[in-house]
Image (tube, rainbow, N blue to C red):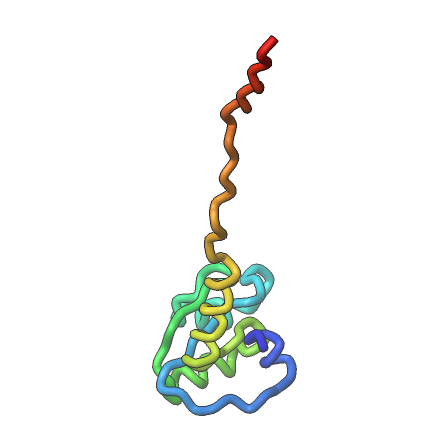
Amino acid sequence: MSAFNAFKANVRVAWSPNLYITLVRGIPGTRKLHRRTLEALRLTKCNRTVMRWNTPTVRGMIQQVKRLVVVETEEMFNARKQKQASHRALRPPLVVNHQPIPAPESSA
């Protein structure tokens, strides 16, 4: 389940020492206080992910901008990255022989 879908489904998330926070909504048009909070979290561009310790301070900052971000635990983040890596895995190369096929010699 993707982080955003899990977030929308309100799935209970197991406790983790690290939180992976992804900015999923744009910054323009948000309140100045929310922009400052995102700046403090080092989230400057959409779809960027940062890792922060799971502390009450960070959780309070996330609570303030919860409509703009998605929060993942370590195992959710690693599962998503592994799925992306397998999707982008290199396929075996397509071998094409461009040498002309020799014409059979006729004995006449």
